[in-house]
Image (tube, rainbow, N blue to C red; front, side, top):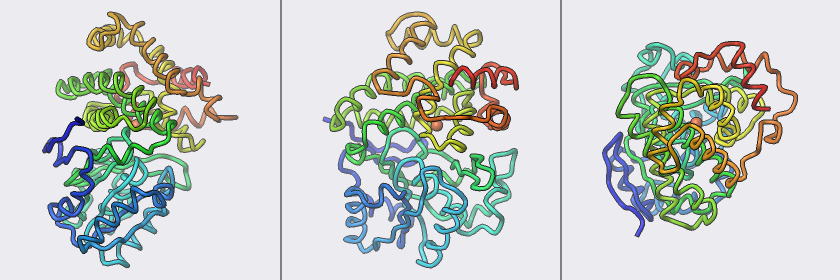
Length: 381
Ligand SMILES: [Fe+2]
């Protein structure tokens, strides 16, 4: 038996195998009568997407799709999405997919009724209060990977197509009002994506757990999230049809996103600019740089990771946790370093500057400076 449940934390979550059939009920609960399903180019042609559209169609909700969404969505994708949304007279969005489809779908709903440019809502200070909250369209989120956790997040990552910078756009009402977590949708995920997205969830839990900010609730969630990934990601990777492992990974992904309200750190701070410039997979990049970041942060997190190792039942010190990351990466076929990941001829000055500007930088347990960040990047190559 795979888990099946209804949760209302942090939003309404319908969790369980086969529950994509409840998409019309989820739309009704969110107040959607003319939904636009937003997904990425790769997913648009897959049977799981056709099935979701058939379910909508049979319930009289139409089968409108927007799929001009790149792997790292940009403001250009957003502009086209808004055009499709307005032309179709839609009243809300079904954000369907991995990070790309979920994030861009959320942005289409957010921007549907705004008059200012999207960059005015970057996650800086109280910029989100500039938005007209009443004009934000309702969102139903349907994740098809297990990693980003964007389905339970209040922000989207959008890449600026001119500057190649990843920006975080935040508003409390960007949190989807209903989520359907159906592990059957993740069964067809290719091995490399299962590995990369799963390690993204691990990175969210790890960085939240190590962040020095005070948030004991997130601390507990992060720790259990680490355990779920450690136990179930190798299983989901080895056998994609293992529904229990797929379900547990969907939980871990949501837990990572809930936990990182406490902060992220150097893994994400360097992964964001690397991904934006070199177009690498986000989660795989995180996994690749994880051990070098742990080495850099070691003096500040030794005790904490010793406790995590004990909780995971793998030992009682930092080294045990560090070795676990190495074992997971090896088992999941993660490239040994950024060079092997395909990062060639990197501009270290530019990457360092972008990393230090990334909002994740503030959550790193060791203060990030020009010197240690550049050294870290060199270490990751
Ligand atoms: Fe991430």
